[in-house]
Length: 141
Picture 1 (cartoon, rainbow, N blue to C red):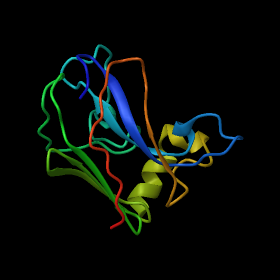
Picture 2: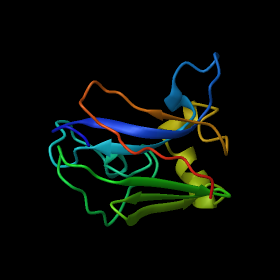
Picture 3: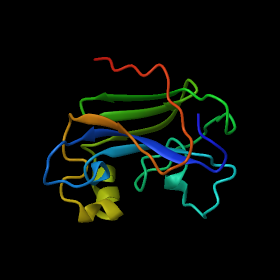
Picture 4: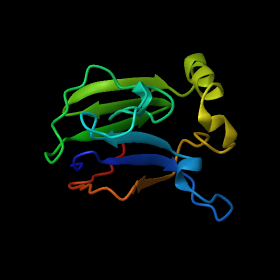
C-alpha cells in the first residue's frame, strides 16, 4: 500500500558487499509509485510494476493510493515476471539481446554490478513516503 504521491520499490538480486554503497547499485527494482498523483514527471519505466529505469509495465490494473495491491515477482532461469493484482504486467529474459540492449542504454550501465547475479537479497526501498508491506513470502519455484 502506497500513500498518495508516494514512491517506493522492491529490489531483488541485491548484493550485500561492503564495497557497494547502495542496494540499487546491484538489484532490479519492482517500482511502487502512486501513478495517479506522483508530483514529478515520470517516464513509463518509472511507473508501478516497471523494472525501474529499464522496462515499463503494461496493461495493469492498480488500486488507488491508500488501498492494498498484490505484487509478485517470479524469477526462473533468467526469465523474470512482474505481476500486479494477479495479472502479469511485465516479462523479460535476462539472457536476451533485448535485455542486454536495454541495459546498455540505461542509467544502470554506470554500475558494473547491477543486474549481474541470479541470486541475492531483497530490499524494500524508502524514499520517506508512507508505504506498507504485508504477507511477504519468498518461495522457491
